[in-house]
Structures are given as structure tokens and as C-alpha cells.
Length: 92
Image (tube, rainbow, N blue to C red; front, side):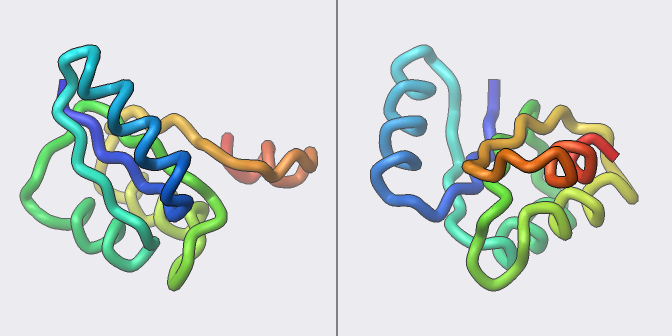
């Protein structure tokens, strides 16, 4: 499975990338929302996106909204945000 990991935290991103690769997944790791949005709008294909919401340069929810305009790729949201409004926004 090819996975796009969008996470700005170095320790968390490295741990996720290592664990996923160990399980046989190909992982592309981006660290900000602008690069993520550019990659997702391009011709590359991923089977899954692991998306942090608190990204530099462009918020993860903005990246997700744009992605949903043209793709149905599954997205797992990774975040420390725990408010009901944040959860509803991610599901919308």
C-alpha cells in the first residue's frame, strides 16, 4: 500500500514512517500543508493519506477540503485537537 503521511512533528512522523515501512508500506512523508496540497493535486496516487490537522503553511482541514473536491482517497486524520467542533469539521 502506498501511503502519504502529512505530519510536521519530526519524532511522530519518523515513528509512523518507520512502522509503516516495516509493515511493507511505501511511505511518502510531507511536513506542511502547502506541499501536501500540491502533491495531492498532482498526478501521484496514494492508497491512504494520514493527515495531521495542525500543519504549518496550510491547515490540514483546508488540505482535506480541497482534496475532497477531486478525490475519494481514504484519509485518516491525526490530531491533538479534541474539540467537538474539530471532529465535526473533519467529518464534514
